Image 1 (cartoon, rainbow, N blue to C red):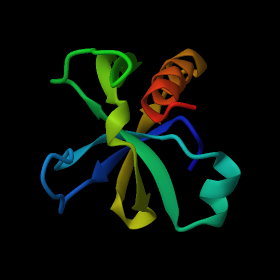
Image 2: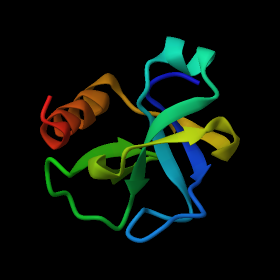
Image 3: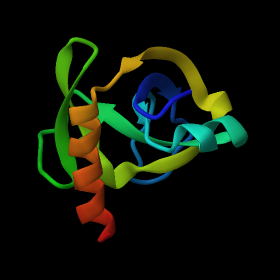
Image 4: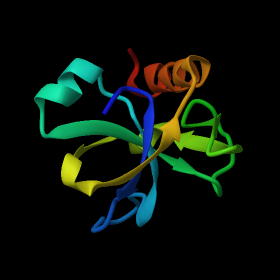
Length: 106
């Protein structure tokens, strides 16, 4: 499980306005941490959300344009990972990183 890998993730159960259901998510945590921990940090991807930087940024995944919902970043147990679905390019990861910097004020 490497930074930039996209997995289908079972995000249920959720509460309130959290993104739900089985959906692709990009692993955003550092690869060495992913190897050492039982959790990974992911950002959900959506085909329905409209790009609204910095909260929602457009990237290319699974042969289509999707959006990364940066304000829905979360740590999940690896047991929620269902199946690998691909990976994002370095440029797409930088787009997400820039969005996260603004969302998290870093």
